[in-house]
Image (cartoon, rainbow, N blue to C red):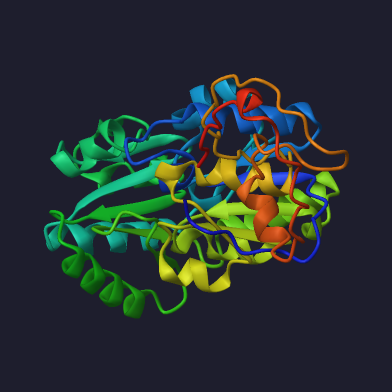
Length: 340
């Protein structure tokens, strides 16, 4: 288990904002039992919980229902904000000419391109990389429309993604080239998939969307905990009073986080919520001892068969030695069990 950084004071957390992929979900893209039960416990005690993800609302609908989340959420990298029931609260869209330029440039260089348009994933034709967005990452199922330029006048695009053939270097090169072309008219970023880049409206981020929601919900940022793993979580982590990086996070996120928790495969989300919100940190179970006969002890002396928890020993390293008990008769002595 990854060691957590310690905050001086226990924060008063009123809202927990959680990234989905590689944060809440493990490397098998599954929600663990511990994460699920810990989030439900936080909600039951009155703490508000919301998701913040690069995926669409539709891709997270089952997860929202399973966790019992009632708060609005941040989707499509902060470009859409939906209520828990799916109704759209806010959205940002890309300029059509920017979309056309990005699609043409990326496709000419062999990239598979998809448009995120109000919950739909639209692409020219089927490729393994696009199918993986749905089959592996659990995003909405792509719809294949033929040449994307032909449908641009009829749709509003929130973001564009371009995927290489699992070539991270090629994706980085495309990002550099497009960034130079955009000259501030769009934002390019990586959402945690190394061979994919995302093109967003300028200034768009999960952090910007979170600021907007905090104003509407009348929650102070100091009472917010945000948990993430990637570049697209940086602004969100910086907005929150308690910014948390899972141990598998990109270094740039660790550099701005206040707290480090376990990896997504170690239930890092549950670890940090248990520590700072529900205050029900799990302690490793001690092995049980077989029953032993009672041995008389002098008054005020701790019985030998009560193990001192490792936490107590760490907190009280200078505990004075116990007085030696009076020697019992040999026939009264029961064998003592060893505890680790």
